Image (cartoon, rainbow, N blue to C red; front, side, top):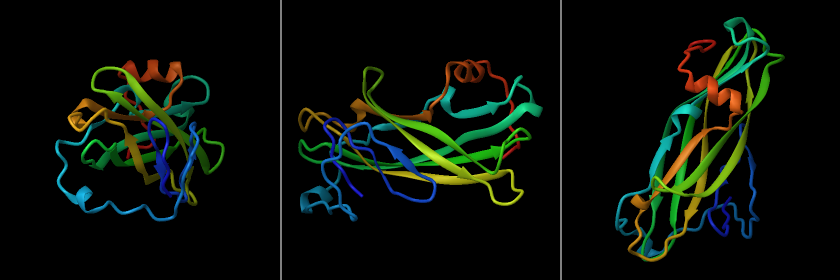
Length: 198
């Protein structure tokens, strides 16, 4: 699937684990991404945007009641990210990001499946937010297993450029879990609690 949006495009590869929430209107779609023309196959004029995980949003712990090990329902952690990009002339930067996750099921889990939400944001380096999209991942645990790992791929992120002199180093792609205020405070506290260990 591919799509174009006014500011940026976040187009996931649909699979078992992904249900996208797209806030902007998709104006085009095809089952196979269009190939770049010959000029697009040339080397990028400059590096890709920096891709990073927001430290305070790199993990999530869902508690039932007091924040203790016995009350853990679900946990999530971003294990790693990888990215590729392509741009030429004054065309938008087209980036693709893969995020690796690990999820855990704790003693207070109410079943063998849950949903986790994460975001991908595009910013100007150390400056303004350009766009942000959120994605919901259905997470399922087989049998009595308490952990599962999965990877999620966002196939197309389009970042507009004013002209050909604007390179990828002017932008950042930021990734993290979508958290409540209390969850952010807990992560900022530096407490280390994972169930189970990955």
